[in-house]
Length: 199
Image (cartoon, rainbow, N blue to C red; front, side):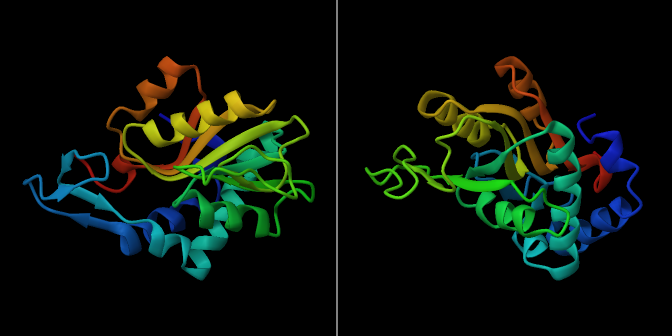
């Protein structure tokens, strides 16, 4: 199970599950009705953009992610565009954020220049990662884990920072846990697909 006990036992966690179910979830029945970004077919579809853009849900995401980021002692939070960009903003803008927590994003395709002001390598933008520190990668929905593993590899190759965890809003439970385990990357989520829809 990839939902940390501190998250699952939080008094507001059931409300986050409810909001994700109401705002993000579609069930195609017993047919594989949806084609996912990974190319896989699934009966379940989760669009967490409305969750991130919802006032109550966004505040809950920021609070619960900061709960785990603080416990992990991370200095930086960010991830691969597009899903990680609003999520990172929710985290660093949350009243529960550590005051020295800094956010960044990793472009899928670098533009060929780094941060002129931050000295970040090409494709890594936002706060400067020039000073080594622990990083938490955030993601909206995790299927295979490939996007976040790509972001982790880019950070490890281009900076002296160390990724201490990947945390997703929702794990579809379709192989990401095993992929992260094989890559040696700790993985957590706020909600599992099985918390919302049973097979």
